[in-house]
Length: 336
Length: 281
Image 1 (tube, rainbow over the protein chains, first blue to last red):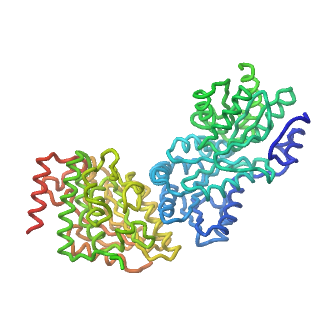
Image 2 (image 1 turned 90 degrees about the vertical axis):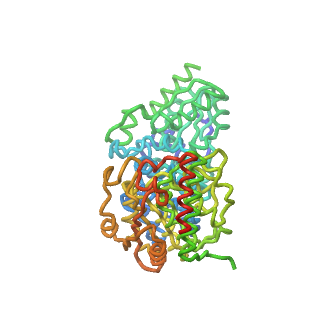
Image 3 (image 1 turned 180 degrees about the vertical axis):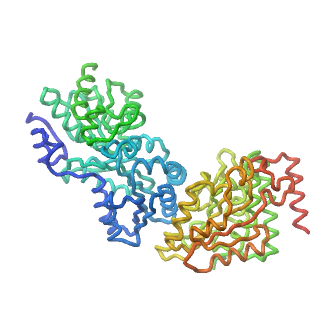
């Protein structure tokens, strides 16, 4: 147990992992709030940053930006299509618009604007998207953005990033502002644990190994990173030693890091609260099948829709909890 | 000092409009694909903007203070390409490459490929929102430019147009003008038959716009309406331009089939002859 090597985790996170309380105790928050905190700091540093809302500024807490910079805050009401295309127009003039809202409506109601007016012309629009994956548990399927990663990954010129906690989401928000071109940022509606120590080295396109391990690799994104760390602890208790990677950037995928992990451990499990078609599991499977096939399983939403309920209960019922990830690891190791 | 506006007289504008109509016919005939009807209906409006009304500099297509133009009905891009070429944004030789591989002139406008294109267009219902964003940015940064957006009357069937229509008066965007090319035809048939949009003026008024109606082919009236729209006010302007689809080519006028059909060489020669003959009268 003492031989496990972790990287960039807070010391209290390691203690709570070992005590089995990471998901139930300690500091943490919805990453949408981390975005809201980051955007206010960013607004102070960069006068070109503007925030666009779609009547959910209270939910994302971008109200704080509106209070700090009222002339750079634009509430479009319940009109995501207009907001996204207006953001594109703003970007043509050199502004850096962060269009904020909910994943289902930003990536589906306004998908035509996202594709044709933002990504095709490579305009410098940042889409700040809460309620990603099935993280809005109690709201039910109409608000569970379980396809957002798949849809955004499929679009040309896209960059798709989802932080796993407060610090990584803040760093992702700041990095997005520096990135030339569109960036999709996916946030959680429900709280996730604060995982990272200040040493966490965020860079768009660079996956980060959080836990060293030799028996298999778990590649996770967004809210499933903390689930994967818990899964690794469960497996450690059985003497199975797994590597855990935070693949915060779905696109461009850090192919080198994932291939190196597959070669080193020979078995891979992916974890996302996104549909299995087109998201992280698909991306990793496509990479491995063409370069270095190894036994692999994907954890995520199977075809269909979930239901209302507490976020943790939905993970349990729909096969995406830490226990499900751990079981998948055992199966890929058995197939190796 | 760089020339900011061509400032053509109404007579000169009429001659230029005839030249642009000829370019449109030649481009679409050459490509054997494209949308002549809606290009010809918007020709007088686009000509007046590029050769008289807009504050632009062809030598500096990225000039931050320039007026912005968006052809939201992007399928009518031959009229835009011709105006840009005639105005000097790029060599007229490019017009012969419309819709061909490696051309700077895509089937629908691409701001990354064509000098002078301020916004990519093609998916209907986006342009007014994009123009709204440009106008908000101009206001925020105290820039004096005006944003011009041409939408089709069929295009306003897209719900997102009305999201933008609702938003522009909220922000009192007097630096934004939408021109509705009211040619009464769309791809399938008459607008009134496919999905009625009337009463257009009342709709824009109800949304809070200053509404003007004009004959979109009376060059003096077009110039007057556009120049009046540029006057500072705290309200966006909607100009309903009553036009004829296929204007200038009698066998295309008022015919929905010429929305997206290319003339053969014989038809094109006939069209060019008519446009040139009328321009001389």
